[in-house]
Every structure is written in structure tokens, then in C-alpha cells.
Amino acid sequence: MPYPKLKDTRLLNRAWPAGMSAVVIILSLTTTATYMVLPFLVLFLTRTIHLSFRSAGLALALLVIVQRGGAFAGGIASDRYSPRAMMIAGLAASACGYLSLSLATGLPAIGGSLIVLGIGTALFLPACKAVLAVVAEEIGPRAFAVRTTVTNGGSALGPLIGGALFSDFKVLLLVISLLHILCCYPAARANPLGRREAKAPPPAGSKRATAGFRGAVADVATDPLLLGLVAASVGFWICYTQFDLTIPMYAAQVLWSPGAVGLLTTLNSVAITVLQLPLLKRVLTGPHRAVSLLTLGMLIMTCAFVPMILASGIIALVVFTLLFSLSELLVAPCLDAAADSLAGPRRRATYLGFVSVGWAVGAVVGNSVGVQTFNSGSPSWHHSVSWFSFTLTAAAGALAFGAMRREYRRRQPSAAARVPDVAPESPQPVPGGRPE
Image 1 (tube, rainbow, N blue to C red):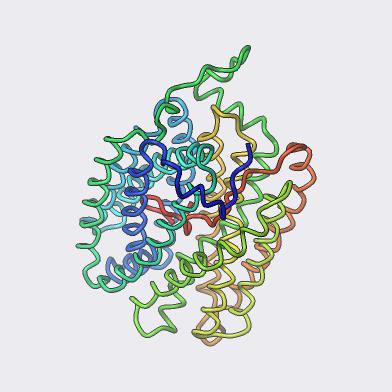
Image 2 (image 1 turned 135 degrees about the horizontal axis):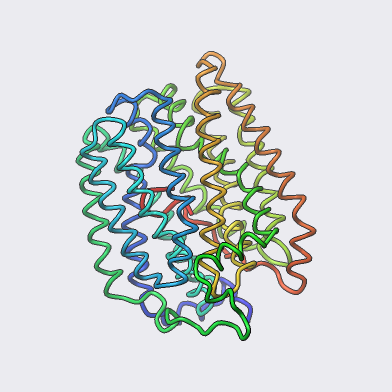
């Protein structure tokens, strides 16, 4: 049954599925808390903890590797057991990660704290996505609209609070740890999937459906289109990683205060919120749109770095942020939508978790390349070597997604990928990471 259109006023009168209010509360608190920290994490590690830029880059790469690489195992656990249980476990682990990070002083302690924080995200992310995907089957795009409103509101408000409290960053980490502990209560009291959380019987004759971890690995390993989607997404995540690494470092050089760096994240969230409905309501219709929009999004990402090559200063940063936001608006939800359309009902969280592996690989490469190329430049040359390398990376990503379009059309002969009618969480409204 097709999703009702956003303009359908009957959406406003439908009752929410059981536990939806709990999900909204959890997302609003965790997203705001996450964005209090994320835009300033590299500055905290380099200026407060006094790590080198290279060490800070490695620490951030470690965080994303555990977050996104572990999301595959988290998705399998969510499908096999309970999305609610995985959400609670993820929130508890994230609380421990923030607490230990506030007490850490050396690189080993920071690395251990980020590993725990990454495990929390790896457990929470696929379970939360699966919950929202199932809710969307009942109430249509309103589920994604609620998610987007909450997460983009949190990602716009969080950097402003974090920037104002940057001088007391360790205290802020303690408060965020407490918020994650409090979120465990609504997650435990409500069943986000209602009756749907009960396990459905496996398809007749299917052995893989009950094969546990090995069956999940076999499913993804023998799905060439899913593997191609993950491989092509690496280019996007290489570029995306720079918004948390080289862009804050560069912005700190040209803006009047380190706390002002959070304004870029706020601008990113506001731009997505403003553009999401007028843009996506028109383009996310018709067959086989997901891969086409992935290609378009990567072309826009290619253009985003051009102003950084040609000019320096605040204007170049603002233009970059607006184009970056438009690219994120198209690519982030379409990756999940494409993966969801390839998954069967019992492998939804597994596929949504596995597609995050591209983020893990992209974070490793993006942090390594970002540190090397950024250090090779200087403010007088606008770090043009760095920006040019990411321009080429984005262009390669556009070509990779474009090459998948025909095969994706064959895989989906009768229906388009179910792409939400609104933007993604701006990008990582999950504990310990930027959006999913």
C-alpha cells in the first residue's frame, strides 16, 4: 500500500503506534546531547586534552570504526532478539562512554572511552532505524517527519549549547552521560514496535532465516547490489567526515571563537530543515529514485568543495555548508532507503546496520587523508590541496552510484525504493555520532 502524501490531513488524526512517544523523547534528548559534543570534539581533544591533530584524527576514526563497523553486528542482534533491548543497551553503553571520556586524560583512556561510546551507537542505531521503518509502514511518512523534526531541532540547538559551554566541556560530558541514563527509562517502559516486535515465522523452506549470525553474513555477502551500495557510499563518507575534522579546524582559524564553530552545524541543520519539504516532496517520487538521487547528491558534494578551493574566509564556509547540507539531504536518507528496499522483513536491521560499514571505511580513509592533506596546506593557500582531493573523491562517488542505476532498476522492477518524504536526521542523531 503506498504511503499517504504529506499534505494528507488525515495523518494528523491517526493514533501513533505503541511506544512512538518514547522514541520521540529518546531521539530529542540524545540528538541534542550528541550535537552538544560532536562539533567540538576535535577541538576538545587538541586544545583541552592537548593531543596532536594526527592523534585526534585517529581517535575520531576509531570512534566511527566502532560505531559504523559494529552496526552490522548490532543489526543482527536487533533482528535476532529485541530492538527495544538493543536500544537500552546502546543508551547505557553511551552513558558509560561519555562518563569515562569526561575523566580521561591520556590517549589510551580516551581511546577506550571512544570505543565504549562507539559500541553504544552500534547497538542503538540499527534498532532505532528498524523501529522507525516499521512505524512508517503503519502511519506513512509522518514517522519520518516526526524523526526529522526532532533530530534537526536537536542538531540545531545542541551546537549552540555546546559552544556556550565549551569552556566547561568535561562538565558538559557528565550532564550528557546522565541524559543517556535517563533515556533508558522511557525505552524500558514502552515497546516501540508494539506487537510487531514478536518474531515472525521464517518463510517456508528457508534455512537462512533461522541461521543466526552465519545466515545474516551469508545474506549480505551474497547480495552484490548491497555490497556495491556500501562500496560506493565510501566516497560520500570520506567527504562527510571532514565536517567533523578538517572543517572545524579550518573554521577555528577564520572565525572569532572556537565556540563559534558550532554555528556551522546549526546552519547545516537549519538548511536541511528549510529545504527538506519543498525539495524532497517533489523529487522523491517515481520509480528507481534512490540511486539517481545518490548520484545527484554526490555531484552537489563535488560542487561544495569548489568555493573552499577558490576562496577563503566566512563566505566560502557558508557556501560550502549550504551545498554540503543539500548533498547530505539527498544522500543520507537514500542510502537507508536503498538498503531497506533490498532487505527482507527479517533482515531489515541487518541490512540497515551493514550499510553503515561504508561509513566506517570512509571515516578511516577520510581521517587519514584529511589529516595528511590539511597539514600540507596553510591558511594563506586555503588548504586547497585538501579541498581539491575531496572534490575528486566526491566526483568518483557520483560515477560509482551512477554505474549502479541499471542494476538497481533490474532488482526493483515493479516499485521504487521506499524513500522517506523528508530529510535524514542531520547526520547522526544517535548516541555518540553524527546521522544516520
